[in-house]
Length: 478
Image 1 (cartoon, rainbow, N blue to C red):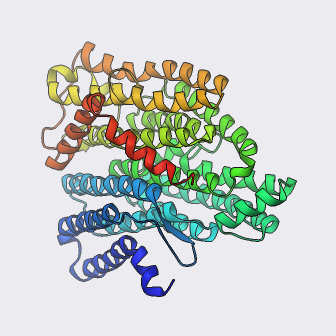
Image 2: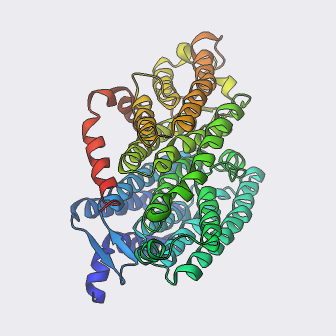
Image 3: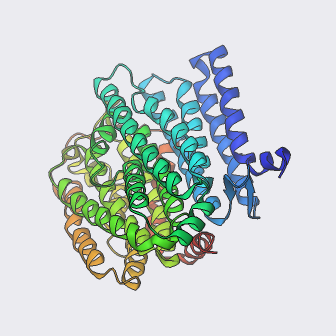
């Protein structure tokens, strides 16, 4: 392929990259007074990129197969672009209320999104690492964006140090895989492993590779950064971590395991099963004693990582399909949850203590209804969207004969419902405290109500998402 056709394959990424550079230059010239305009232009760039991704229906590759465009990458890119655009809008309103808006924020979010898009299209370990580091470098800065806040600075530093450690583990695993297969291309690794069998060195490489990827999704035992970073980061940035960045990390995890190592599925399945079970159990137990809503949602996200990884552990097309359905539900529901958290303000100041939700059904009944719908969906209680996402993952695990891990995850899901129901008990049965502010931004309200409506009414129209996820999963199993 020539350079022109290669660049055409990467057109959505090029639009985001060039647009981010242009906004950065414009922001430096104009300053922070046009931060709102920069945010809207960032959303427009993400929307244009999404339209191109949606209309680019053919399978293609670029740069000698290092990047691929297929059904899987299109599905995950659309989720990432949607999550990123809504997080940019949430951040715009959040910082407008705090009167501390800076134009660098939407630019950094664009650059992180660019890295995510490159990650999910990577078909080579070199391309994988390039996209991963582009995303990570922007996320390190975003985590510590409130430079006058000690918690935000601490969050950025912890994320940077532990992220560097995980990158080292990932690189070491990639180097071992390269040493025993002679290539970094996913297709070449798959061919070499199928022909030469499994070596002890390759197993070590696989273990280090999974460890590095498990850190990126916040899975146990590589979860230690998640609660502190989620709590310390500004709320819209935490939403960005939980939604777009998490979907990208999962997509990377799926492709980096399924594409190069189909011949040794039994070896990596054992690792994924252990990580999945540990994550669900910790997420169910550790969140019970939390009083900070963002910290509680951090442990909740660790539990959801475990449920999603069960689909990957199945190692089948049905498992990946269930995992993609789960990621779509997870992104939508968490966008709504963090919109609700962003709306928890009193006298212009953010409120994060869940005890301040007491009596919300009487002081703000509509807010309480949206919050309750999203909370019940995260808990996986019928008939909301969460139960269907879990059913598809658990069914795939059962079909793959993972009976014990699936049973443990189901029990953990029941146990984890306690802390979600505690939020409902505070909102509907406790004596009310002083009401939250009414002016939280039109965009935040739209996100909150739109996602809660999807959580409630998804039961009536699940077929299109399931079909699209099935097509995306099929792209990984030619």
